[in-house]
Amino acid sequence: MTMKVVVGIDGSKYSEWALDWVGKIPFRSAPRVTAIHSVDLNSARVPALTYPSVSGYEPDIGEAIHLLESRAQQVELGTKKRMTELRLTGSVRVEQGPIAQALLKHAGNTAMIVVGSRGLDAIDRFMLGSVSTAVTLHATTPVLIVKEPPHTPRRILFATDGSASSGKALQFLLKRFTATADGKPLVILLVHVMPFLRYTAVKEAGEQLLAQEAAKLEKVGYRVRQFPRVGPAAEEIMKIVNLEQPDLIVTGAKGRSAVARFLQGSVSLKLVQQPACSVLVVR
Image 1 (cartoon, rainbow, N blue to C red):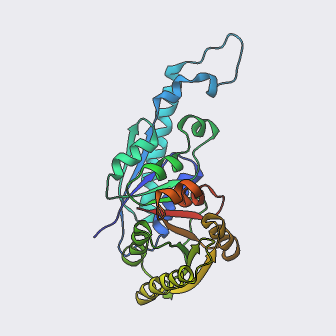
Image 2: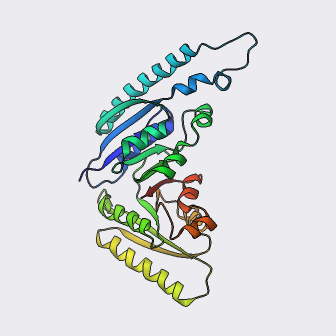
């Protein structure tokens, strides 16, 4: 089954990286890509943010809209050219309105979303909010947040907790990705963080979970290293990220319970907001 991918583009280096990442991800089959650029006309109606304060100067809203539309044409043409260079099949669309809404609409319940961690400039980020955070919170499909230049992910950190969403992330690795690149197995850094509970049964259950999931990953060709840890989940995962320097983090969208998310916050959202490598959040 062909993977459908929706990519947010705005002419920034981060959106260029996002598109290039699609060409580097080890999909089992070539994806079909829809690249989305959004013209938010509301941005032309807040001149105080866009133009310096000059006595007697009133910016022309029509001119601002024209600049946005001209930029959209440039982004569209540049993206089509880049998709051809990357040998990606699909289309480029220009929409109106906030980019996060456009990405969610086109992704629906089937397509993976790929978006840069930042937009074109500080004004865009102020007006639109954090697109990557908004998409991560509201998408019903996997979201890849790109934070660095494209490269083939050869070392993937997979954070598991045995939850349903974590199970979906595991299935994504098993069914959507190939387990090798250039004839060499990809390495999975399999991480499970347990709470501070002095119960032997908790430790045994955690070790059993790691062993079971490692076996599934190794069966399809991955090389797996296991990392059982104890403590706050996001903090412990980031310690391993800093130590092992993976190319990509993969995690489920939610933890085991609403109570845990209330006490600890969303682990996946914390990982998205960390200034580290790119993150794939699977639902």
